[in-house]
Image 1 (tube, rainbow, N blue to C red):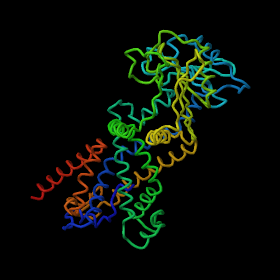
Image 2 (cartoon, rainbow, N blue to C red):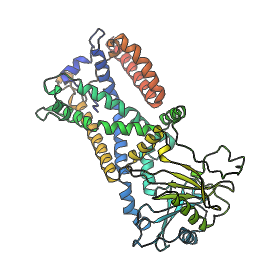
Image 3 (cartoon, one colour):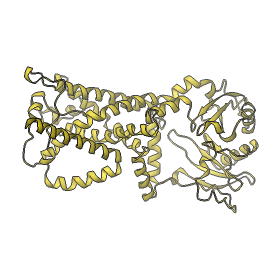
Image 4 (cartoon, rainbow, N blue to C red):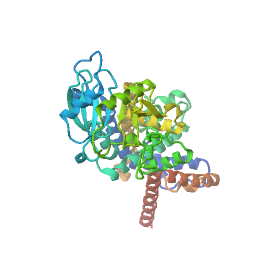
Length: 481
């Protein structure tokens, strides 16, 4: 939302010198104005980078098809796909390196089958061989990361951490932590303004005043755009925080306390005793990834048997088949339909008996687990297909415009008198917290403390803002003295 304050240049100049005295509920608005200004000025660059990189990532499905179309698509859709065993044999003949990790069936008739190999020298990445399911001919191979192409992986890392590793993730967490604060604060300031009849009408809230000039005109475009995009921005903030570095950890603790994690699939065969090192470990859904090589490839024919058994139990659409991690484990067949309506059922299969030994259903996921999963897919732009991508692109472009208009207002509000000229507008008045009613302080301080615990990066940056504000105040007092 708004990155600057609802004031004119002349009023701002006087307001920064001495805030009005006395406690009143108007002090809350004054505090919001000051917080909104400083957060907008210092956090907006992070939001701008996140918007630009997110906009680039939004259209990775189309970019992948453009760059890797030869690998991802077949030349001609056939009548009946070949058995998985033939496709796997062709892939292994072309790429005998590493070990067979998993196989992903085509999502659409024109898509290729993906045979995923664990190659030790690739580390956490994999080699994916793309096979035409109708001819069993290898279309090519790529070094992938959890199923993503090199281009998608590069853009994902750019958006997530600017290719700076774990340290770089702080930039995106700063953006996600403050985005909802800016949106909520801007909405309160815009909806609560009391200037003129226009402020009290729906048109005045949703549309900018084209008759205005200067900073008022810019503020109208800035705020009205923020109102239209508020829900989208709040959604991106909330979903971005769920997988952030520090706030994501707090979210995981919430899921633990609320028992909101997705149900875990039991991959141990009935009557079998798991090895000591595997007991209590991660479920086999990720077996074979991350360079954990197996001693030998499973029989390719077993993939056909596992797929046939899973299909008979109702697992439709594209699925990923993962071989057993050891002799006591079962095959895992998991649906990977990410487009609404999603399908995330999983089964374990004992191929020697041709039966399903365990199952988890999407319908049985706790509400928090469902919201988290769907939120991630929506944030990535895949949940509703091209419509999801268009909405994300509009929100990203809108955020870029809002940021531009916010900085433009800061420049437009600069003093222009010869004896008081400046490059930028002055900040709102200091000491606004002294105008807050005591009940607001009594409720607000514990609430802010709890919020800063839940969002550690927000708390640290807020303390940094306060420290800079105190230092600036001391310096100003020293100059005045």
